[in-house]
View (cartoon, rainbow, N blue to C red):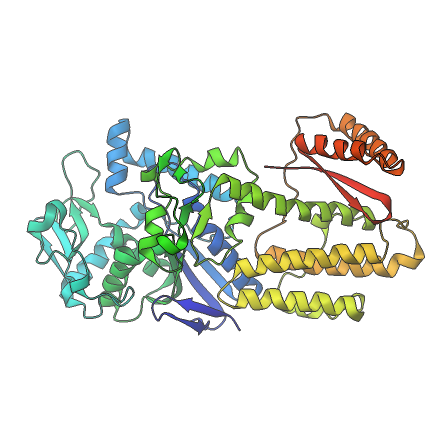
Length: 532
């Protein structure tokens, strides 16, 4: 049974879609006026894993991520660059989608643009006016917050606890808490015809109109960053439920924000917060104020994500983002990415080890695609006995973690337990020191293959280890391999002669060059390149 923490009710609830077997999921996407940075990848990677797990669990899932391609920031950027707003939006949307592709986020079903839904936005706004929840003033249209009695229910605030945002339009509003549904156009700004004159949509109405048009008046999951709870999601709820008379979304899920690491204190060269501890103002789970203080954003100098991809493998970054529970703030620094990368190396070494003892590539293995297939597979004869019991227990632990509010951090922890179990089996069965054709170990090899297929089943639900990572090709591998064999042989001879100083010197000098040596039972030594 999958359980989800619902921000709206502040409780963990059993996941039961409005239509049995089907899930509609909406994630607020970016405003495309600048290149995307790592903060923009947090939500998509998390919800990509959530969709994969829902699909794996038997739910037919439709996932929508919107693109805000009309906004004050976009207009300002287009004027600054002297090009049309649409040209800026197209350029930055292409950048965003290229970064998603690099991160393996390929399960989004629909990626609507706000400007493609102007007609729906106008109709939505007109309905709110007709029902008495909105009013026109000076060519603008505003939602009258006090007319919606449940305003503030998502963030548990009363109007007295909120700050109205009047700005330059305060004189046009009946109350400072009212927010814009439609904005009248200024000279030389992009605009569309409407019953209230030329103008453009407000930010909040875009998501309400798009989600309703694609997923219906009530859908299952609405996701976004913690910083979107107020005012964006609160306003979405108000205008959607005022118009439709029913709940907008059943489950509201908010991911923690990407934080500049305490040890670094900077993103893109600009200070974001003091290097203080969590007890003295550091980011806390579910607490917006503490997470906003250190949030990575464009306005705080965050560098373009494509620059980060030039330094780190995409799988390294994805693994990092999934290594904690989605509701927790993510402590980011390049040192943290490197630390995670070292952990990943142990999995890549096992994949090579598995290929050496089985003659099969990990990446070519067939593995169960659904939970039901996995339940049947783990009962196979190859997984009988004590080792099979260990594998089943690990799979159950993984499923428990993911069933418990999609705890990818707990699931990743199971991966490391699984890896240790696989490696221990290889060593206990002496699979590396016996020939692949050895009849005495054929059963053990079949068992190892089945267990590795279970691991691949689990990894696939998080979108990990889907294909071999790109190897660095700066060296000529035809020369590197025999040179490494020579160095390993020299080190083995030094150890045999009890010349441990020379053996350690070889290991240490290779490590300085980015090459790791791993000694295994039976005198086997395996080398791997360390990746950033």
